[in-house]
Length: 432
Image (cartoon, rainbow, N blue to C red):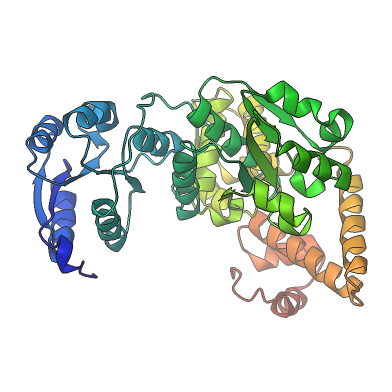
Protein backbone atom coordinates (compact mmCIF):
# COMPACT_ATOMS: atom_id res chain seq x y z
CA UNK A 1 0.00 0.00 0.00
CA UNK A 2 1.43 3.33 -1.04
CA UNK A 3 1.49 5.94 1.72
CA UNK A 4 0.17 9.40 0.89
CA UNK A 5 2.28 12.51 1.34
CA UNK A 6 2.69 14.16 4.71
CA UNK A 7 0.51 17.13 3.73
CA UNK A 8 -2.63 14.99 3.89
CA UNK A 9 -1.46 12.58 6.59
CA UNK A 10 -3.99 13.70 9.23
CA UNK A 11 -7.02 14.25 6.99
CA UNK A 12 -10.07 12.65 8.60
CA UNK A 13 -12.11 9.96 6.87
CA UNK A 14 -15.53 8.64 7.91
CA UNK A 15 -16.43 5.15 6.64
CA UNK A 16 -20.14 4.29 6.37
CA UNK A 17 -20.47 0.52 5.96
CA UNK A 18 -22.85 -1.92 7.68
CA UNK A 19 -20.72 -5.00 6.95
CA UNK A 20 -18.45 -5.17 10.00
CA UNK A 21 -15.64 -7.11 8.32
CA UNK A 22 -15.54 -4.84 5.28
CA UNK A 23 -15.75 -1.77 7.49
CA UNK A 24 -12.68 -3.01 9.34
CA UNK A 25 -10.76 -3.81 6.14
CA UNK A 26 -11.44 -0.37 4.65
CA UNK A 27 -10.59 1.41 7.91
CA UNK A 28 -7.29 -0.43 8.26
CA UNK A 29 -6.30 0.26 4.65
CA UNK A 30 -6.97 3.99 5.01
CA UNK A 31 -5.25 4.11 8.40
CA UNK A 32 -2.14 2.43 6.95
CA UNK A 33 -2.18 5.06 4.21
CA UNK A 34 -1.86 7.77 6.87
CA UNK A 35 -5.45 8.97 7.29
CA UNK A 36 -7.31 9.50 10.58
CA UNK A 37 -10.23 7.06 10.18
CA UNK A 38 -13.48 6.65 12.06
CA UNK A 39 -16.46 4.46 11.07
CA UNK A 40 -20.20 3.95 11.49
CA UNK A 41 -22.95 1.67 10.24
CA UNK A 42 -25.70 4.31 10.53
CA UNK A 43 -26.55 6.65 7.61
CA UNK A 44 -28.15 9.20 9.96
CA UNK A 45 -25.10 9.16 12.24
CA UNK A 46 -22.83 9.62 9.22
CA UNK A 47 -24.76 12.68 8.01
CA UNK A 48 -24.82 14.18 11.53
CA UNK A 49 -21.08 13.65 11.98
CA UNK A 50 -20.30 15.13 8.57
CA UNK A 51 -22.49 18.15 9.43
CA UNK A 52 -20.51 18.58 12.68
CA UNK A 53 -17.30 18.46 10.60
CA UNK A 54 -16.02 15.34 12.34
CA UNK A 55 -14.48 14.22 9.01
CA UNK A 56 -13.19 15.74 5.80
CA UNK A 57 -14.46 12.98 3.50
CA UNK A 58 -17.10 10.25 3.58
CA UNK A 59 -16.69 6.75 2.12
CA UNK A 60 -20.22 5.33 1.92
CA UNK A 61 -21.76 2.04 0.88
CA UNK A 62 -25.05 2.25 -1.04
CA UNK A 63 -27.22 -0.50 0.44
CA UNK A 64 -27.32 -0.24 4.23
CA UNK A 65 -29.95 -2.60 5.58
CA UNK A 66 -33.27 -1.44 4.12
CA UNK A 67 -31.92 1.97 3.21
CA UNK A 68 -30.37 3.18 -0.05
CA UNK A 69 -27.83 5.87 0.82
CA UNK A 70 -28.08 7.38 -2.66
CA UNK A 71 -31.51 8.66 -1.58
CA UNK A 72 -29.79 10.76 1.10
CA UNK A 73 -26.99 12.28 -0.98
CA UNK A 74 -29.00 15.47 -1.43
CA UNK A 75 -29.46 15.74 2.34
CA UNK A 76 -25.72 15.25 2.80
CA UNK A 77 -24.96 17.90 0.18
CA UNK A 78 -27.07 20.43 2.07
CA UNK A 79 -25.49 19.50 5.40
CA UNK A 80 -21.89 19.52 4.16
CA UNK A 81 -21.51 20.78 0.56
CA UNK A 82 -17.72 21.12 0.82
CA UNK A 83 -16.98 17.47 1.76
CA UNK A 84 -16.22 14.91 -0.99
CA UNK A 85 -18.16 11.64 -0.95
CA UNK A 86 -16.88 8.32 -2.34
CA UNK A 87 -19.62 5.79 -3.05
CA UNK A 88 -18.92 2.04 -3.00
CA UNK A 89 -21.50 -0.51 -4.07
CA UNK A 90 -22.13 -4.09 -5.10
CA UNK A 91 -25.17 -2.76 -6.97
CA UNK A 92 -23.10 -2.48 -10.14
CA UNK A 93 -25.42 -0.89 -12.69
CA UNK A 94 -25.10 2.18 -14.87
CA UNK A 95 -27.96 3.76 -12.91
CA UNK A 96 -26.04 3.41 -9.63
CA UNK A 97 -22.93 5.05 -11.06
CA UNK A 98 -24.90 7.87 -12.65
CA UNK A 99 -27.08 8.53 -9.60
CA UNK A 100 -23.98 8.58 -7.37
CA UNK A 101 -22.10 11.09 -9.51
CA UNK A 102 -25.12 13.29 -10.19
CA UNK A 103 -25.97 13.20 -6.51
CA UNK A 104 -22.65 14.86 -5.77
CA UNK A 105 -20.32 11.91 -5.24
CA UNK A 106 -16.69 12.51 -6.18
CA UNK A 107 -16.17 8.90 -7.28
CA UNK A 108 -18.02 5.61 -7.58
CA UNK A 109 -16.17 2.34 -6.91
CA UNK A 110 -17.89 -0.97 -7.68
CA UNK A 111 -17.37 -3.90 -5.34
CA UNK A 112 -15.07 -5.73 -5.29
CA UNK A 113 -12.48 -2.96 -5.61
CA UNK A 114 -8.74 -2.78 -5.07
CA UNK A 115 -7.84 -1.09 -1.79
CA UNK A 116 -5.06 0.83 -3.56
CA UNK A 117 -7.71 2.28 -5.89
CA UNK A 118 -9.73 3.38 -2.86
CA UNK A 119 -6.71 5.07 -1.26
CA UNK A 120 -5.90 6.77 -4.56
CA UNK A 121 -9.49 8.03 -4.94
CA UNK A 122 -9.52 9.38 -1.38
CA UNK A 123 -6.20 11.15 -1.96
CA UNK A 124 -7.45 12.71 -5.19
CA UNK A 125 -10.75 13.76 -3.64
CA UNK A 126 -9.04 15.61 -0.80
CA UNK A 127 -6.88 17.52 -3.26
CA UNK A 128 -9.78 18.43 -5.56
CA UNK A 129 -12.77 20.70 -5.17
CA UNK A 130 -15.97 18.80 -4.45
CA UNK A 131 -18.17 17.94 -7.37
CA UNK A 132 -21.72 19.26 -7.16
CA UNK A 133 -24.57 17.47 -8.82
CA UNK A 134 -28.26 16.94 -9.16
CA UNK A 135 -30.03 14.11 -7.49
CA UNK A 136 -31.17 11.30 -9.75
CA UNK A 137 -34.01 8.85 -9.55
CA UNK A 138 -33.74 5.91 -7.20
CA UNK A 139 -35.19 3.64 -9.88
CA UNK A 140 -33.12 2.12 -12.66
CA UNK A 141 -33.94 3.98 -15.90
CA UNK A 142 -31.12 2.22 -17.75
CA UNK A 143 -32.10 -1.45 -17.69
CA UNK A 144 -30.13 -2.70 -20.69
CA UNK A 145 -26.68 -1.84 -19.33
CA UNK A 146 -25.78 -4.70 -17.01
CA UNK A 147 -22.34 -5.71 -15.84
CA UNK A 148 -19.89 -6.18 -13.01
CA UNK A 149 -16.80 -6.80 -15.17
CA UNK A 150 -14.03 -4.20 -14.87
CA UNK A 151 -14.51 -3.14 -18.49
CA UNK A 152 -18.21 -2.43 -17.99
CA UNK A 153 -17.61 -0.65 -14.69
CA UNK A 154 -15.17 1.64 -16.49
CA UNK A 155 -17.88 2.38 -19.07
CA UNK A 156 -20.40 3.12 -16.30
CA UNK A 157 -18.06 5.57 -14.59
CA UNK A 158 -17.36 7.38 -17.87
CA UNK A 159 -21.08 7.62 -18.63
CA UNK A 160 -21.62 9.12 -15.19
CA UNK A 161 -18.87 11.70 -15.64
CA UNK A 162 -19.79 12.64 -19.21
CA UNK A 163 -23.45 13.08 -18.27
CA UNK A 164 -22.46 16.42 -16.77
CA UNK A 165 -20.70 17.63 -19.93
CA UNK A 166 -22.03 18.86 -23.28
CA UNK A 167 -19.22 17.81 -25.61
CA UNK A 168 -19.66 15.14 -28.32
CA UNK A 169 -19.04 11.57 -27.19
CA UNK A 170 -17.77 8.72 -29.37
CA UNK A 171 -18.84 5.16 -28.49
CA UNK A 172 -16.62 2.50 -30.04
CA UNK A 173 -16.72 -1.27 -29.98
CA UNK A 174 -17.90 -4.21 -32.08
CA UNK A 175 -21.26 -3.84 -33.78
CA UNK A 176 -23.91 -5.28 -31.48
CA UNK A 177 -21.88 -4.60 -28.31
CA UNK A 178 -24.35 -2.06 -26.93
CA UNK A 179 -22.86 1.17 -28.30
CA UNK A 180 -26.24 2.73 -29.08
CA UNK A 181 -27.73 1.57 -25.75
CA UNK A 182 -24.84 3.24 -23.92
CA UNK A 183 -25.39 6.43 -25.94
CA UNK A 184 -29.09 6.46 -25.07
CA UNK A 185 -28.15 5.92 -21.42
CA UNK A 186 -25.80 8.90 -21.48
CA UNK A 187 -28.43 11.07 -23.17
CA UNK A 188 -31.06 10.20 -20.55
CA UNK A 189 -28.56 10.78 -17.74
CA UNK A 190 -27.53 14.17 -19.09
CA UNK A 191 -30.65 15.59 -20.76
CA UNK A 192 -33.42 13.60 -19.09
CA UNK A 193 -36.59 13.53 -21.17
CA UNK A 194 -35.24 15.72 -23.99
CA UNK A 195 -35.82 14.06 -27.39
CA UNK A 196 -33.06 11.97 -28.91
CA UNK A 197 -32.96 11.84 -32.71
CA UNK A 198 -31.02 9.13 -34.53
CA UNK A 199 -29.50 8.88 -37.99
CA UNK A 200 -27.43 6.29 -39.81
CA UNK A 201 -25.21 6.70 -42.90
CA UNK A 202 -28.09 6.47 -45.41
CA UNK A 203 -30.25 9.10 -43.73
CA UNK A 204 -27.27 11.43 -43.28
CA UNK A 205 -26.50 11.17 -46.98
CA UNK A 206 -30.13 11.65 -47.96
CA UNK A 207 -31.16 14.49 -45.63
CA UNK A 208 -27.85 16.18 -44.87
CA UNK A 209 -28.02 19.29 -42.62
CA UNK A 210 -31.77 18.79 -42.03
CA UNK A 211 -30.86 16.03 -39.56
CA UNK A 212 -29.03 18.57 -37.40
CA UNK A 213 -31.76 21.21 -37.76
CA UNK A 214 -34.40 18.78 -36.51
CA UNK A 215 -32.35 17.87 -33.42
CA UNK A 216 -31.42 21.37 -32.23
CA UNK A 217 -32.05 21.78 -28.54
CA UNK A 218 -32.10 18.02 -28.09
CA UNK A 219 -29.74 15.07 -28.64
CA UNK A 220 -28.55 13.51 -31.89
CA UNK A 221 -27.20 9.96 -32.16
CA UNK A 222 -25.12 9.48 -35.32
CA UNK A 223 -24.58 5.79 -35.99
CA UNK A 224 -21.86 3.76 -37.73
CA UNK A 225 -19.36 6.56 -38.32
CA UNK A 226 -16.94 4.02 -39.81
CA UNK A 227 -19.34 3.77 -42.80
CA UNK A 228 -19.77 7.49 -43.52
CA UNK A 229 -18.97 8.58 -47.05
CA UNK A 230 -16.73 11.58 -47.70
CA UNK A 231 -19.69 13.88 -48.55
CA UNK A 232 -21.34 12.92 -45.24
CA UNK A 233 -18.12 13.62 -43.34
CA UNK A 234 -17.75 17.02 -44.99
CA UNK A 235 -21.37 17.88 -44.16
CA UNK A 236 -20.97 16.90 -40.49
CA UNK A 237 -17.74 18.85 -40.19
CA UNK A 238 -19.53 21.94 -41.54
CA UNK A 239 -22.34 21.47 -39.02
CA UNK A 240 -19.90 21.24 -36.12
CA UNK A 241 -19.32 24.98 -36.41
CA UNK A 242 -23.01 25.90 -36.52
CA UNK A 243 -24.78 27.54 -33.54
CA UNK A 244 -27.19 25.55 -31.35
CA UNK A 245 -25.49 22.26 -32.14
CA UNK A 246 -27.41 19.36 -30.55
CA UNK A 247 -25.64 17.14 -28.02
CA UNK A 248 -23.88 14.63 -30.25
CA UNK A 249 -23.37 10.92 -29.63
CA UNK A 250 -21.54 8.85 -32.25
CA UNK A 251 -21.20 5.07 -32.58
CA UNK A 252 -18.45 3.38 -34.56
CA UNK A 253 -16.08 0.43 -34.76
CA UNK A 254 -12.81 0.57 -32.82
CA UNK A 255 -10.83 1.42 -35.98
CA UNK A 256 -12.98 4.45 -36.85
CA UNK A 257 -10.00 6.80 -36.67
CA UNK A 258 -8.73 5.24 -39.90
CA UNK A 259 -12.07 5.93 -41.61
CA UNK A 260 -12.65 9.59 -40.72
CA UNK A 261 -11.06 12.87 -41.66
CA UNK A 262 -8.57 13.68 -38.87
CA UNK A 263 -10.24 17.02 -38.12
CA UNK A 264 -13.66 15.38 -37.86
CA UNK A 265 -12.41 12.59 -35.62
CA UNK A 266 -10.87 15.07 -33.20
CA UNK A 267 -14.13 17.05 -33.02
CA UNK A 268 -16.29 13.98 -32.40
CA UNK A 269 -14.04 12.15 -29.93
CA UNK A 270 -13.83 14.81 -27.21
CA UNK A 271 -15.42 12.19 -24.99
CA UNK A 272 -14.78 8.51 -25.69
CA UNK A 273 -16.34 5.38 -24.24
CA UNK A 274 -15.11 1.97 -25.45
CA UNK A 275 -17.74 -0.75 -25.17
CA UNK A 276 -15.92 -4.03 -24.56
CA UNK A 277 -16.59 -7.10 -26.71
CA UNK A 278 -18.89 -9.56 -25.00
CA UNK A 279 -16.08 -12.13 -24.82
CA UNK A 280 -14.21 -9.81 -22.43
CA UNK A 281 -17.10 -9.42 -19.97
CA UNK A 282 -16.66 -12.69 -18.08
CA UNK A 283 -19.67 -13.71 -16.04
CA UNK A 284 -21.60 -10.66 -17.23
CA UNK A 285 -22.72 -12.82 -20.16
CA UNK A 286 -24.89 -15.06 -17.99
CA UNK A 287 -26.14 -12.02 -16.04
CA UNK A 288 -27.17 -10.37 -19.30
CA UNK A 289 -28.82 -13.56 -20.50
CA UNK A 290 -30.96 -13.76 -17.36
CA UNK A 291 -31.71 -10.05 -17.66
CA UNK A 292 -32.96 -10.50 -21.23
CA UNK A 293 -35.12 -13.48 -20.23
CA UNK A 294 -36.85 -11.20 -17.74
CA UNK A 295 -37.02 -8.34 -20.24
CA UNK A 296 -38.94 -10.63 -22.59
CA UNK A 297 -41.41 -11.58 -19.88
CA UNK A 298 -39.97 -14.79 -18.41
CA UNK A 299 -39.37 -14.35 -14.71
CA UNK A 300 -40.06 -18.08 -14.27
CA UNK A 301 -36.89 -19.21 -16.07
CA UNK A 302 -33.49 -19.77 -14.49
CA UNK A 303 -30.19 -21.11 -15.83
CA UNK A 304 -28.58 -24.36 -14.75
CA UNK A 305 -24.94 -24.17 -13.68
CA UNK A 306 -23.71 -25.85 -16.89
CA UNK A 307 -25.88 -23.51 -19.00
CA UNK A 308 -24.42 -20.47 -17.23
CA UNK A 309 -20.88 -21.79 -17.71
CA UNK A 310 -21.54 -22.36 -21.40
CA UNK A 311 -23.00 -18.86 -21.88
CA UNK A 312 -19.95 -17.36 -20.16
CA UNK A 313 -17.57 -19.39 -22.38
CA UNK A 314 -19.33 -18.94 -25.73
CA UNK A 315 -17.68 -16.24 -27.90
CA UNK A 316 -20.99 -14.69 -29.10
CA UNK A 317 -19.79 -13.49 -32.50
CA UNK A 318 -22.95 -11.40 -32.82
CA UNK A 319 -22.22 -9.68 -29.49
CA UNK A 320 -24.99 -8.54 -27.12
CA UNK A 321 -27.49 -8.47 -29.98
CA UNK A 322 -27.00 -12.21 -30.60
CA UNK A 323 -27.17 -13.01 -26.89
CA UNK A 324 -30.48 -11.14 -26.59
CA UNK A 325 -31.94 -12.86 -29.67
CA UNK A 326 -31.04 -16.25 -28.16
CA UNK A 327 -32.64 -15.33 -24.83
CA UNK A 328 -35.72 -14.04 -26.65
CA UNK A 329 -36.14 -17.37 -28.49
CA UNK A 330 -36.13 -19.22 -25.18
CA UNK A 331 -38.47 -16.67 -23.61
CA UNK A 332 -40.99 -17.35 -26.38
CA UNK A 333 -40.74 -21.15 -26.47
CA UNK A 334 -38.94 -22.31 -23.32
CA UNK A 335 -40.68 -24.41 -20.68
CA UNK A 336 -40.92 -23.19 -17.10
CA UNK A 337 -38.16 -23.98 -14.67
CA UNK A 338 -34.46 -24.46 -15.26
CA UNK A 339 -32.89 -24.00 -18.70
CA UNK A 340 -30.21 -26.64 -19.28
CA UNK A 341 -27.22 -26.69 -21.61
CA UNK A 342 -29.11 -28.49 -24.38
CA UNK A 343 -31.77 -25.76 -24.47
CA UNK A 344 -29.14 -23.03 -24.83
CA UNK A 345 -27.33 -24.90 -27.61
CA UNK A 346 -30.59 -25.48 -29.48
CA UNK A 347 -31.51 -21.79 -29.22
CA UNK A 348 -28.12 -20.68 -30.52
CA UNK A 349 -28.38 -23.18 -33.39
CA UNK A 350 -31.84 -21.95 -34.44
CA UNK A 351 -32.29 -21.26 -38.17
CA UNK A 352 -30.27 -18.30 -39.34
CA UNK A 353 -31.66 -15.38 -41.26
CA UNK A 354 -32.00 -16.09 -45.00
CA UNK A 355 -29.30 -13.59 -45.89
CA UNK A 356 -26.65 -14.93 -43.49
CA UNK A 357 -24.58 -16.47 -46.31
CA UNK A 358 -24.88 -13.22 -48.23
CA UNK A 359 -23.63 -11.26 -45.25
CA UNK A 360 -20.64 -13.57 -44.93
CA UNK A 361 -19.87 -13.10 -48.63
CA UNK A 362 -20.21 -9.32 -48.27
CA UNK A 363 -17.88 -9.32 -45.27
CA UNK A 364 -15.36 -11.37 -47.24
CA UNK A 365 -15.51 -8.89 -50.12
CA UNK A 366 -14.88 -5.97 -47.74
CA UNK A 367 -11.98 -7.85 -46.13
CA UNK A 368 -10.32 -8.64 -49.46
CA UNK A 369 -10.85 -5.10 -50.78
CA UNK A 370 -9.30 -3.62 -47.65
CA UNK A 371 -6.26 -5.89 -47.85
CA UNK A 372 -5.82 -5.13 -51.57
CA UNK A 373 -5.84 -1.40 -50.81
CA UNK A 374 -3.08 -2.03 -48.27
CA UNK A 375 -0.97 -3.88 -50.82
CA UNK A 376 -1.23 -7.27 -49.10
CA UNK A 377 0.20 -10.24 -51.01
CA UNK A 378 -1.00 -12.93 -48.60
CA UNK A 379 -4.73 -12.36 -48.64
CA UNK A 380 -5.79 -16.00 -48.91
CA UNK A 381 -3.60 -17.11 -46.02
CA UNK A 382 -4.73 -14.24 -43.79
CA UNK A 383 -8.42 -14.77 -44.62
CA UNK A 384 -8.07 -18.49 -43.99
CA UNK A 385 -6.54 -17.92 -40.57
CA UNK A 386 -9.28 -15.48 -39.56
CA UNK A 387 -12.04 -17.84 -40.68
CA UNK A 388 -10.36 -20.91 -39.14
CA UNK A 389 -9.96 -19.22 -35.78
CA UNK A 390 -13.56 -17.99 -35.75
CA UNK A 391 -14.90 -21.45 -36.65
CA UNK A 392 -12.76 -23.31 -34.14
CA UNK A 393 -13.49 -20.90 -31.26
CA UNK A 394 -17.23 -21.00 -31.94
CA UNK A 395 -17.46 -24.77 -32.33
CA UNK A 396 -15.27 -25.38 -29.27
CA UNK A 397 -17.51 -23.14 -27.18
CA UNK A 398 -20.57 -24.96 -28.54
CA UNK A 399 -19.01 -28.26 -27.46
CA UNK A 400 -18.10 -27.01 -24.00
CA UNK A 401 -14.38 -27.03 -24.84
CA UNK A 402 -14.27 -30.76 -25.70
CA UNK A 403 -11.89 -31.08 -28.65
CA UNK A 404 -13.04 -34.54 -29.61
CA UNK A 405 -16.59 -33.30 -30.25
CA UNK A 406 -15.36 -30.12 -31.93
CA UNK A 407 -13.14 -32.10 -34.29
CA UNK A 408 -16.09 -34.29 -35.29
CA UNK A 409 -18.30 -31.26 -36.03
CA UNK A 410 -15.52 -29.65 -38.09
CA UNK A 411 -14.90 -32.87 -40.04
CA UNK A 412 -11.36 -33.22 -38.69
CA UNK A 413 -9.54 -35.76 -36.56
CA UNK A 414 -8.26 -34.66 -33.19
CA UNK A 415 -4.59 -34.50 -34.21
CA UNK A 416 -5.38 -32.31 -37.21
CA UNK A 417 -7.45 -30.00 -35.03
CA UNK A 418 -4.64 -29.82 -32.46
CA UNK A 419 -2.08 -28.92 -35.13
CA UNK A 420 -4.35 -26.27 -36.62
CA UNK A 421 -5.00 -24.73 -33.20
CA UNK A 422 -1.27 -24.66 -32.48
CA UNK A 423 -0.60 -22.90 -35.78
CA UNK A 424 -3.23 -20.30 -34.86
CA UNK A 425 -1.76 -19.74 -31.38
CA UNK A 426 -4.76 -21.36 -29.70
CA UNK A 427 -2.94 -23.86 -27.47
CA UNK A 428 -4.60 -22.41 -24.40
CA UNK A 429 -8.01 -23.69 -25.46
CA UNK A 430 -9.85 -26.22 -23.30
CA UNK A 431 -8.85 -29.87 -23.34
CA UNK A 432 -11.13 -32.90 -23.03
